[in-house]
Image 1 (cartoon, rainbow, N blue to C red):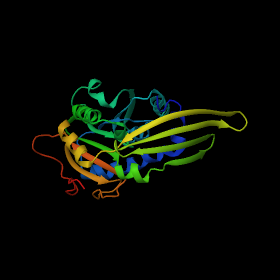
Image 2 (cartoon, helix red, strand yellow):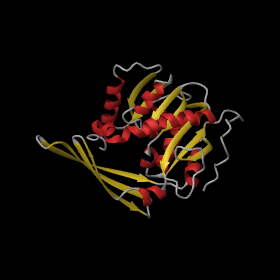
Image 3 (cartoon, rainbow, N blue to C red):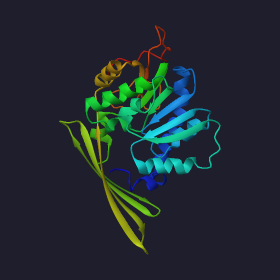
Image 4 (tube, rainbow, N blue to C red):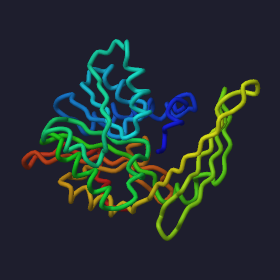
Amino acid sequence: MIYECYAPLYDASGQVRFALLVTVYLRELLTHHPVVGQRMLDLACGTGTLALCQADEGWQVVGLDSAPAMIAQAEAKLSGAALVGSARFILGDMRHADMLFPPNTFDLVTCTYDSLNYMTSEADLLACFTSAAHVLAPGGLFIGDMNTRHFLEFEWDTYAVREHAGFVQIEQSYFDPQLATSTMVLTGFVGDDTAGYQRFDEVHVERAYPSRVVHHLMEQAGLRVEAHYDSFTTSPPGPHTQRIFWVARKPAGAHYAAPLQDNTTTP
């Protein structure tokens, strides 16, 4: 299982920065795509940074993740935290959130940091979107990001070594052009020169999807796409975009929040 050994090292390895960036970016997105209410579900919540940041801004947040070790890290950070809103964490599969929560439970559902790319079949990706649509209240919003094929194929390093205090990680990646998947083997060494090091290995597989496929699956799931943006901007994606943020709404009658601009045409 991935993240079993990596979870305690996840934040210290620098991964926490992405969640902090998303927290700021969400504020901007929600000014252009507002929701009524502050009930939020964070799918694939990881160590809970985004969920806790949102809770500290007054949201009532549930974080869901399928990795027990990541949930344990999130709960440890929650313990003793003084939050303006509230947060709790649940172990579960983001494809089946509809089995954990009744319809219309949340006003906002998020799924960030390429978690959707881990859905390596269209059926799994559709299940995730359908599950999100089920638990959203009418008029509620789904926001998620995905790495593009351009990034996985041309920008993701094929080999990298990252050194941290008490931890060294080695990443080796391979892109399969036929399957549009990138397979990254993560080898970690935890310890020091005195006590020695413990090794662990994880395999992470991400698949890239054309924008037209993502758009179609969201609509099929019952979500209306309002916009998709080049990562952390309000500009439309281009041919060299590395990450796309998708914004889609569960219909509420005939009225929808107006997007910042009409950029839903597939690039």
